[in-house]
Amino acid sequence: MSKPKQQSLFEDEELPDDPMPWERNSQNLYLAQIVLNRPVDRVFHYLVPEALRPLLKPGHRVQVPFGRGNQLSPGYCVGVGPADENQPS
Image (cartoon, rainbow, N blue to C red):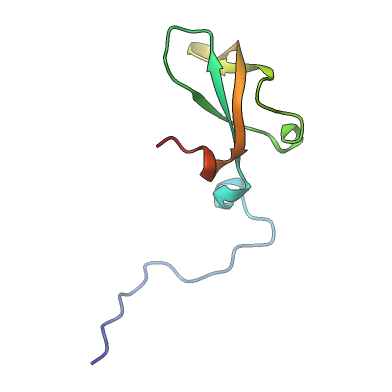
């Protein structure tokens, strides 16, 4: 006896050649792990633009938007890589 197949809510479609940013796979995303000189004991994750991927390395000093109004704050990169590898556990 075969199992009943669940119906799909969406049609199986191929992604267009140039998908919108929110349609892209997370494998194309790079995250930087940033620590800030703030009274918080955690690492913050920021998306790295494609143009900066080859340049950003752990130990580099960076300026990132943080807090109200996204004011630029100095910090240090402690890790960088594909989004899947940087996900907090």
